Image (cartoon, rainbow, N blue to C red; front, side, top):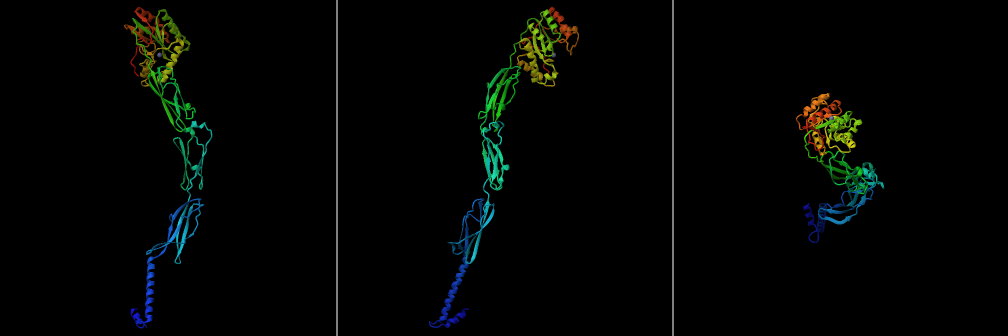
Length: 496
Ligand code: ZN
């Protein structure tokens, strides 16, 4: 090609170089420039570039008109960078915000006879939470006592409709929190603070917080308390008391009062009750040789006859009575009036019942106490345990005799066992003969300075022996006395 050009140049006229040769040079120069321009154009690679505001995927709330965040296009290339001049952009497509879903918007621009496009995804999402409506009952002043009773609620969602069944209600402290979430994940909450659950109740003790009382048989009578809620509604009926006072046992007892309101607030208060032992008198040794005749299990049909005999000889005795035979209760009054001592034995004499527990024992005990009080006008101060304090018939309730012996002592009641047994009720030296009763008694007493003799005035043959016993005793220098709380106690070794 080069040699051909040189040939043509050689034939050019005028300036030494031929005209057509110069023309050819010019054409070549233009062609070269064009080629260079095309090369530069290709190297630059100029094209439209879209700028999509907020991104190629956006969310827009359901139900609100979609506002396009905007887009613009400019030209950009490798060699000459981006030009600021914006290209016209057309938008194709619509966004329907009335239903959840995804729409596409296309942005178009033209450059050099070509259409350029970019696409934006628009997700229509439900962002509206359900609405919880709380209902309330006006002036409801009854149910606060029972704790909060739901007054009702409703949950409605713009898309899902009625969501009431999906509401969860949770109590925290004094408030109730309601929560529901729609299918799109929007959560609604509502809070209720029922008036009548606000604040803890008030609990007020009646009487002193600390009480001291002597041991006794009567049931402990608590002075009580009052309770009210923050608004003054009476809650006294809801007070619970824990703890028990054993009135017959010296000690310190804590009673815990508590009351809880509908919100679960509990208030407690404590009362301390001290039961003090009633002191027993110091034992006094009787003057001279003494026989204490004691008669258990009466009064009965032979008690009057016995009292006659005792009267006749100026002898005093002791009766540990039961409630068995009401026809002869009057004998208790007669015995007391005659200077004898009446003490507690038992109302029922049924071992399985009275030794089943302290409460049962003292319930029985109290019945006899009341009978004696009624007949004599005085509280008895001595007693004898059925079977004696060393009995083993109570073994079905381990330790009961140990506890009862301590309890009756706390009550200020002296218990007496015996050291001479007449044999009139079976067991050791048992007999049903009057003479044998006499022999058992006098042989038991012989040589003792004082003796506590056990007989039963419900046994005719035993009562029959009393006159001979008195005569023997008086001949032998004994005085027949009645026991009292200050008599020297006769206590067996407790075996249970
Ligand atoms: Zn008895």
